[in-house]
Length: 423
Image (tube, rainbow, N blue to C red; front, top):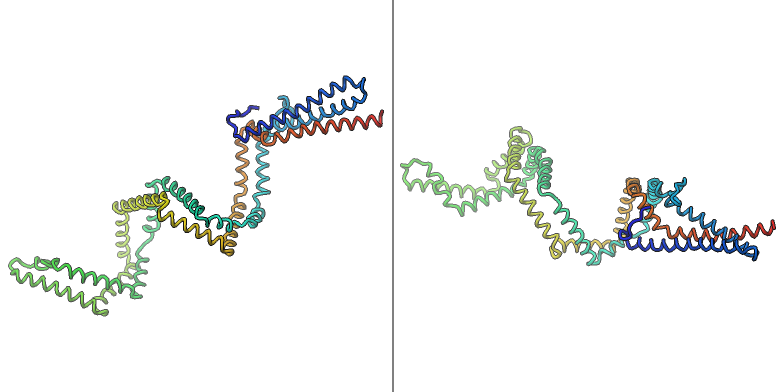
């Protein structure tokens, strides 16, 4: 089997490899010791009959050591490189082992009852609250969240975001007909006299404009008169129009039942009805809506708004002293305090987490377990074998050592019984 260079192993794997080599040496040393003991006892047993027991023990020890060496080696490779059937089990059945391991995890660990029992015995909300209410921890969570949000914002393509906003606006704002909805809304406003304040504001604004914009009336009417009309008469006409306008607006402001107000009410009621039922009015509103949203200037303003909002949000996320980061930290600490002090809230949060985890496990347990199966299938057989041997090989060498000892004891016991009964 191809060995992974030591330089590519982790420190823990390097330590496991050293331990494995030491235990292999100990197990081999025990076998060699039994072999030497057998040779000595076999050569001297005629002179010293009691050495026959030592020989029997050495024979049993060698048999046990060799048998366990074969068994342990057969797990990882062909003994002595000979392709004996049912050897090199791990590299040959790697994929099957991975599937079995995935099924074992899926059946025994990714079970809804097991997950529910474990989560219900763990005070998740209380522990999270105790940890989160510490200001440093809350600030850490806020910083991590800000880093994630910053990464997401920087990864977003401005053009794609603008296209998405445009598509959403077109789907939810442009595609639906505005006329009936706006008409129904305006109808309710007029019925409830909710437009009175807007009418008052309009006439107040006109009055203010008239008060400060007297020069705007200069020539407003007189320039349309014949040129032979005296200038004094022209000024008189302009002044008269201005004064009548001021009087009219003042009268409307002072009289809640002024005919002009009633005319506005009738116009708004008629407009509300036309927006709901008149195809021509509805079409004109739709045309105006499309003209506004399809205007290059509007698209430019939307792009500028997104860029400005993104830049401002990035600055706030990256600055630990920004108001956004401070409020996020305070909110997290407050949530932690509530979780820590409110048993009812703790129970609700724990129930939600448990239900969500059980649902996810029940729905995706096979997909989760398949991670194990798919990962093992992608592993190289030689590397997989070495990984497993490094993890359990040292303990398996104790099997070889125990086999040597047990074999020796069994050998001497069998010899003693046979000698006692058979002579």
